[in-house]
Length: 107
Image 1 (cartoon, rainbow, N blue to C red):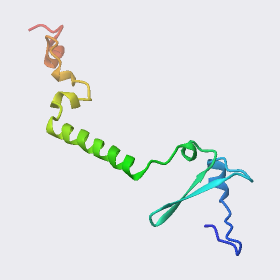
Image 2: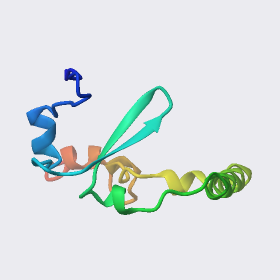
Image 3: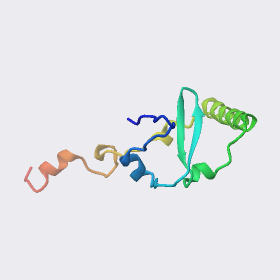
Image 4: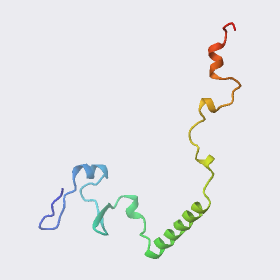
């Protein structure tokens, strides 16, 4: 945990500085986020992206809601969710497992 000095300076923990490649002299962007503060390194892709206005974010949110409503109104068929391969006993192969035990033995 970092402590604020009398000059309102903070020390970035070494593990975090190494993980985000923060070096001495780098710029950090401080963004209020409700009850928290986001610290974004100036060299990150996120810091170079322009912030969207509230209107733009609401428009994107409404588009997302409309797509979700469409998915809920027309759910895909159950076959679309089948991710596992068919089990051996579900495959029609012309013989049964029991036939293997009787093969080669006289009747």
